[in-house]
Amino acid sequence: MLFCLPFKSAKSVEDANEDNLHVEKSPPSYRSVLSGGASELAQLRTLLSENKLDAYVVPNEDEHLSEIPAPSELRRGFITGFDASAGLAVVTQSEALLFVDSRYWIAAEKALDPALWKLRKVDPRAMVPGGFQDYLVNLPAGSRIGVDARLIPPALKQSIDARLPAGSKLVTQLKNLVDEVWPNKPTRSTDPVKIHPLKFTGRAADSKLAELRKTMSEHSPSASYLVTPLDDLAWLLNLRGNDMFNQPFFYAYLFVAPTDAVLFIDPKKVTTETMDYLTGLGVRTEPYGSVWDFLKAERERDSKSTVLVDGKASFAVVDVLGSKATIIPSPVNAAKAIKNEVEISGFHNANLRDSVAVVRWYGWLEEQVVKKKKPITEYQAQTKLDYYRSLQKYWGGPCDFISAYGPSAALPHYSADEENSLVIGQDAPYLIDSGQQYLDATIDTTRTVHFGKPTKEHKRAFTRVLQAHIGVDALIYPAGTMATNLDGIVRHHLWKDGMNFGHGPGHGIGSYGVVHEGSTGISVPFVLKPGHVVTNEPGFYLEGEFGCRIESTIVAVKKKTRQEFGGDIWMGFDRCTMIPIQSKLVDFSLLSKEEKAWLKSHNELCYEKLRPLLKKAGDKRALALLGKFF
Image (cartoon, rainbow, N blue to C red):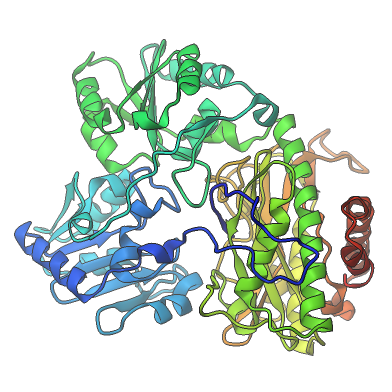
């Protein structure tokens, strides 16, 4: 569970073998836009009155419904001061509320100004309603509730409309009131988009477009398709950008017709090389903002044709297209989720290189904290890991870390900063959830370690998490298995002790793409197929004390079994992440014989694969750690 940032040069970094703590300042974060306060909230309420609105909804998403938008789109972060990637705000004349799920309850309490904002804790498992829709439907009858139509999906609009009392109305607009009260609002990047080479993608863009057009023709010979999710668009065209501080995407829409296509993009972002490439694909370009007039014209053209869109298209898109719009499951997303041989090889190779960087960093950190007893903060530790990773081949950019010691690790989405972060001690577990963008894969890895003597409670919690992790990694299952069936397999080890965690046990992950790839993951309702790449990340968090999580990237593959009952239908997972698991945090009395064998085999495999690479790097400290620390 992490979010990646764009490429950043490593030319000025320090020598890794020195005791330097700090490489350079981390790239921009959500905090860079958290400047809203009482004045801006008052101005927003004035705009509500001018627009005859009783309430205003402020989502976190951008107009492509991205999970983690660019700084220019972080309206909810600006107005609330809360910097996490999930949560929604509602402002009325008398109240300002932030709705967040259990992952962010503690962080939100710390971030919000209680004089301005109320926190609403949302728990989808609870019997008592508490979501923002429950709040909206209980506003006085006749209420007018405003929202930017570009920031919500059609399904959400329909759900709210169905629940509002008679006389109340959700007023959708093609403007955003927060933008009007946001001084010095960041502008979108104009960095050029780049062609992502075939040696990383494993498949040319013209082949991907041809497959999409085949799917379109199955709906209608004249059907077209509007690609709105940025990760789908980047994958389809084999292009990458630098608009977002989390993933290598760029703001654009792509309209694919049976014989041609139009990319709506800021012309400043298209170089001559990229223009020639697009022309070769039969794609012409138009300015980004002209997409709305284009869709209006398309609505009036040929009443028998249809425009296919997926459920992540905004309500604004569907509304402008009117009856021409047909919502279907995204064929681009489905194709993207099944990685080809080149992409799978990239995941294995990138994770191995990344594991080298992490173990080298662990060697440095263990020496600083244990041997030299230096006061290394969570922030300093994560910055140093950025450096070690920047040395690796095909490095594409650092990530927003969860570097968390003790009570910080009890926050599943904690983010350390330079001014306020704990010193890493020897009395509690230290959790690092991090990764990188490499040109051949996106990395997402979590390990929990202890630099002192773990307590019985530390070891028991960590061991239950380890058992949950092993339960998925070692699983054999028949083809056609729904990923939702894995959720109980993950959690039942924790349930034995009345433990649980509030996030998903795993998510899909992109190939130099999105960290949280939609529609795939453990506990997500989809059928696991060979080539699906997901994370395996159970955890446990004891508020105010400690947290632990183990996360590895795994690939769904065919497996041979003893009986082969039903034929060649059996599947399992291959593990990409080659970072050892610290054995001193394990209560071996809780492990079965098979679980002990798994842990021994994993750590031995990591040793076998990493030892020659660490030797090549000349890192004796990491080599010593590899043999004793895990």
